[in-house]
Length: 270
Length: 321
Image (cartoon, rainbow over all chains, first blue to last red; front, side, top):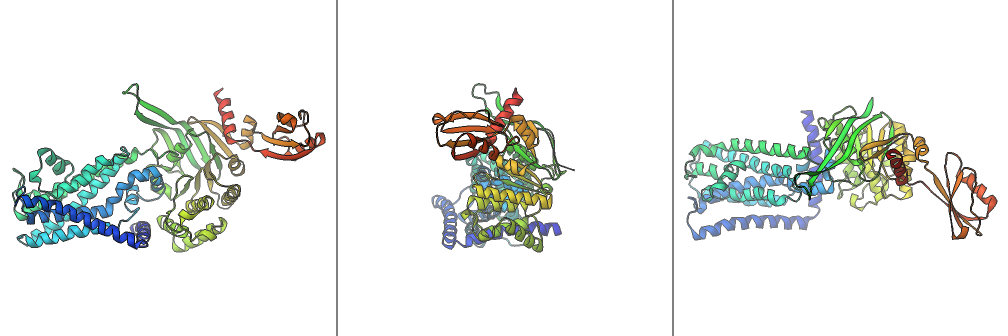
């Protein structure tokens, strides 16, 4: 226990200094916050525009998809808030900051995650939380312990699944300097896919985002179960409860990628 | 106890596939079967040309790089399996990388590092005060790191690496780019640090002054292999590291040959400027100057130190045959 408290002190010291330095640039912080908010709103508008052409997409109405969007976006934004710094890995490799992480008595991944704090990402969380709240109000939901349990479970597992995508991408960056385009495809592409009904996906995407990068378990499948909307043909209704399995799978893959990447790290010369 | 022990330590980098033969990858052996032992309290200079394998060795010693083969233990620990325990017992300064937070005042970087190394509040205070005093950092303690001069930043980096009282201090090019005075200060501090705490020192450098003033043992590495292991005197004997006395004379004079302990290198401007090489073990600059003055009137003089590149080149030539 003393050990945990001791290691917490290290992360707290770094994060507190990061928060202070951001707070000292107030105007810039506010603009970042508004910017992040706008991006979130635009992303929702994209979906809303689709629904002006059709009442139903993949068996989901706009109200129902609001719930999928809210759940997925909130889980993603929270994961982004905590693990988004993994995106900086190529920069840290080039600048040699990563070497310095190796010289400190904390796990490298934990240092990477806590190396900075982007408070502006809170703006994104607000968009997701609002969409989720609206989605919960406008839909006809049969409230009960099971419903709440499913929502909490999905949100927690969604967070873990998206966090795992960030870590996996970072692990792969050890090999693919300048490979961010590729990893962004499943990190940010995965977020986008998660906010849509999987019924409209072609089979290949279904395998990709239902299995390999299991973001379908973050929102779409649980909401299908919750609202009783039939999901992709042939899939059982209880699949919405399987998010923990998907999260476990995502964590294992991410952990392997990270270990593998770290062992192949070759330093930034000099 | 041995602070550093390596056996057959090897690191091979495989690059992109060869352009001519796509099946073969370019292989570069950065460190090649290195056997190394450094004992507690030693001060070792690790020198070699650029790309000789110095940084790669250090990165394997501290657990940044995975060796391709061979064994390595640092302060008795396995650098990969026990990296975190190792980090608590060694201090490392990479001249080109910063441990500090560039947008924070120096003092705040120290307090974060104290938290990282779990120093108690009291320990943090006394240790910081001690280092601030010894490295004369008082005047820039509240300055953000990005505004420090190179000399100030390097002192802060060394302090940061020593905050947790490591047994082994590894310095990679600590004096690179520093002016003469900053170099001198840093060296004096390191000597005092060793004397008081018995810290083992391993440093890579391109500066002969660092080696002369800080190291009692020298390792020269060439293509990832040890080319020399011995004392500074031994190194000087092997390669004849000589100083050069350059004298400007009042009148054009004949070549100053046959001076005791010195060798005439060449004359310029018809004998107005002459260069004499001498071995500091056999004669002193003062004695040589006196001998020159007997023959001609000296207007000006300068002494050039042997260049570490020359020393290394000589060693390479000697060992490669």
